[in-house]
Length: 238
Image (cartoon, rainbow, N blue to C red):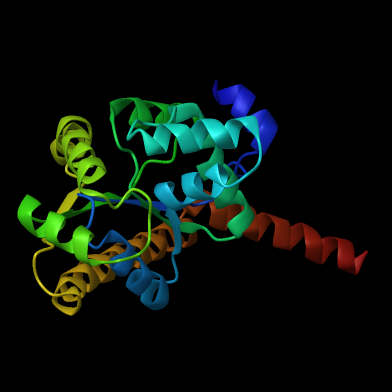
């Protein structure tokens, strides 16, 4: 599967530093709002698995019709298709920092991502919010989405509990979970989010400085630089 998708879509150049953060939370937890704020302040590209699938569902193709029918029935779209859409969007963005919103939704998604894209996420931002608050928000947000009816909402809750929470727990065991209280106001939630992403920036800057220092202090490199300099001087004199 990995080779087939990469041959169709492409892949990142070897050695290029790519930063990925997964953003998870129940339907209506405010993932989109927080991702928008992160994009503005920290320069990430926001990729929503749901938006990519909804856009695909609008296309007049066999694949688009399949996606539309699955989403209408509240069923999950095959991981292979989600990965293909996600990788394509990442490559087309031209950025190297990504917020992947609403993904991975289950263990199959996670394993497919690791198999095909294989970029270890820096962490998982989990917006935790009580079920009652999530339901209230969805029923009142009036976005005109076909999947904002009570029956579909409850199916989505069940899918999240059964399929997505185990993914959250998987990353928690790996020390990559960053959980915030999503029941607060959007501004208050973003204050918590800012602290997490500011720490990420600091960590990456320190890692970059440390790597630069190691290169500069490498005795072998200094010897080779000196040797090349000597040869260059001799050639110039001759």
